[in-house]
Every structure is written in structure tokens, then in C-alpha cells.
Image 1: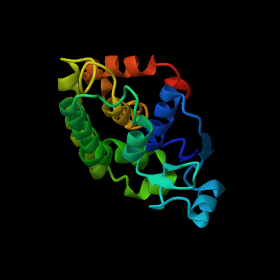
Image 2 (image 1 turned 60 degrees about the vertical axis):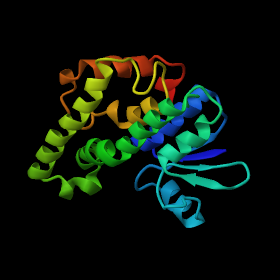
Image 3 (image 1 turned 90 degrees about the horizontal axis):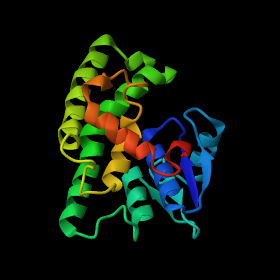
Length: 199
């Protein structure tokens, strides 16, 4: 397999983390924003929706969308719960991640990190994203104050999905992570899993 991955992207990080945790072999093709590698990948038509990450299977089929890639890689592993209710709870967190978390946490990180997005980083927009982001993080904090993991009693795709942008929310997004000690402990638990910090 080949994973077309943007090194600075939390969406790409999710897929790299799960590859590390499952030990599934894949060649990582780094395609940072503005790179020649990304231009080539788009020109070759290997990115179904024109964005990263994309996982190209051994038979040439390409899978897009980070959480869909997680589902594919997580099949028949402990990262997808056997219990139907826990699976639904896990999926709920994954849908929430893309609909509520990523559009705020990731967007603020992008606005302050990427020069080509600087024009969009008005003080008003950054302040709005900061306030909304703290609200989003509080939802996670409330859950993680009562449980080690987001869905069930062991790490699942829900945790890997939300790890992607939460692990850099403070350093790249400027969110006040001291307000969220339970999230801090959860991030440490994930970082301690084999291979995660090298992903």
C-alpha cells in the first residue's frame, strides 16, 4: 500500500498512527502543501477527492477521507469494538470529529501555520475559532474526565481520529490546553502506545 500523506496534517497523522499501531506495511509518500510531490499526485489522479490523505491499495484502488481510511485499516483489529453499541458510539465520535472538531481546531491551526492562509487569519476570525474551539475541547474533557477512552474501555478508532488535531491544538492552534487536564492525560496515553510518536 501507499499512503499519500501531508506531514503537517492531523488528518494524515491519524492514518500514520493506525498504520504504526497495526503494523500494516505501507510506503509513506510525503506531499506537503505546495510541494512538487503534491502537484504530481494530483496530476497522476491518485487523490480521488483531490486532497490528502489517500491510501492506495495493492490493487490500485484509492481510498480517500481520513476516517474512512481508519475504518479500512481498523477492520479485524481491536481498534473497532465487537459490541454494536460501542461501534456506534465510536462512529459518533468520528462523525463529530469531522463535523464539529476539525472545522474549528484544525482550521485555526491552518490559519496560524500556513503562510498561504494568512490573509484569512483576521483577529476576529481567530478569536471566534479560539472560543468555539475551547467549547469543542470541553466536550472531550467532560467525557475523558470520567473515562480513559472516548468509546468503551480501550483505545478505538474514535481516539485515533480525535488525536490527529488535538495533539497539536496547543502548540499549533494556540488553544489553552491547561484548561483540559483530562485531555492531557488522554494524549499521554495515546502517545505511549507503540509507534505513535514515530508516526
